[in-house]
Amino acid sequence: MKTAVFANSKGGVGKSTIALLTSLSLATKYNRANVELIDLDPQATTSDSLSRFANYRFKVINNEEFYLGSTTPNNSRIISHLESSSDNHISECYSVIDCPAGNDPVRSTFLLHSDIIFIPTSVSDADVFATKKYIASLIDLFESDVENSPKKPPLAVILPSMIDHRDELNELRSILAGMPVYFGKPLRYSPNFRRAFRAERDDSNVKILLKEHAAYSQWITDLFIHSDRLKLRPKKLFQL
Image: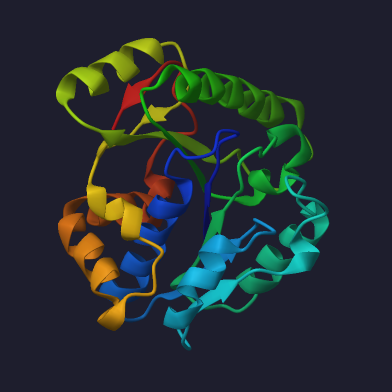
């Protein structure tokens, strides 16, 4: 069982969209993969939209027992679920967790039970400010609970999101240069993202997204599957 979390305290940075790309790509590219998408948002926007794709290899979960409030996760319930899933002895089992805006690492100890935490952000001032604050809080969680953690801290990867051109990417890399995390492949802006969660006829919107961003989806699923190959945490921003 491998677990990836998409999180940031800021909303509108692409968490749910990239979680959609990652989970559906895992389920469609790898015939032996068993994938579950856990939506921790009480509004259930992601799970309501993707539930139509659920089958015996792709589960979409929005369990009211997984959260105590709009931004407060029920850590014990989530951890118990992840541990029970790990006991299934399925060699290719993946859990993708989509966190709501306002996620606070201090109140989210379930993060320590994941393998990799993806932190999407755009280059806007508001997004960058929130992202830097979120990463600092995340590092505090890693360091404060190191003795009680069941395993080594998960990897933390910044995902440059909705990037229009190389100058924006370079600007974001420069701003976050001192952060001790990985810096991932940029997701280019596309107007098709606006239609990502619509239930269109023949699901043409989702098919277009998967085809348009096939290279990105391949990169992020490979990183997720083989996350154990990376070192624990870089001392400063490290470009993947």
